[in-house]
Image (cartoon, rainbow, N blue to C red):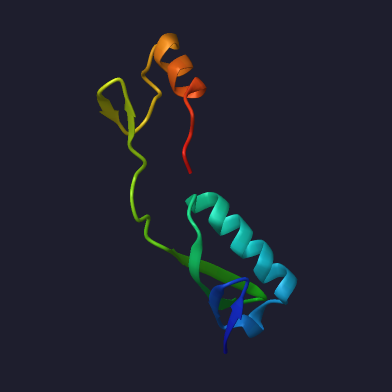
Length: 92
């Protein structure tokens, strides 16, 4: 049985209560760092259930431009560059 729960397509949703499925979705999203598109539940017998998931693809990686440098992350920047980035006006 397929069901939509919190915007996630859940296969074999009859294997777990909805409360447990919501917890599985939350844990999967936290683990993956991306929104979950599909959750697949499979009975392993003895009351155990295997949980597999698929995520939405990440559309792009954030690119920052600070004083002419294009970078994906700021983890290697010095303190001055970090301060410049944190103080700039952000346009949403």
